Length: 90
Image 1 (cartoon, rainbow, N blue to C red):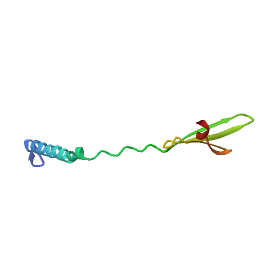
Image 2: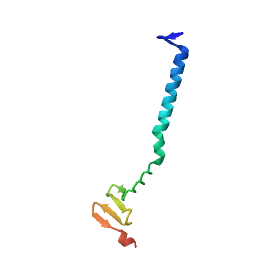
Image 3: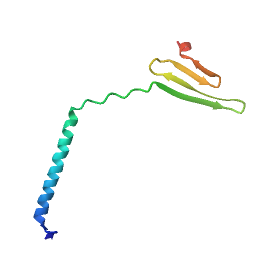
Image 4: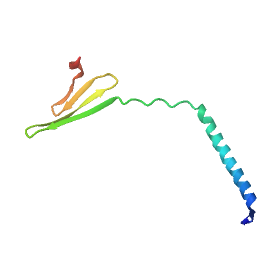
């Protein structure tokens, strides 16, 4: 059986060589990957925020806590303003 002038055995042989070439090329391209330096660790976010709120028929409040993960300082923010509370907790 001919496929556009190429015998079946020739087509299989060509396909085999192309497959081998692709395989070797993929090995060679990935060969240098093992020698690369590891990526630096991801930095931890410096600030964490936690919001809060409550409501009732007579009163509604909302705000947030802000934590500095580097220093351990804690602030609370609300409609009354921002206040550092880590000093009061010690």
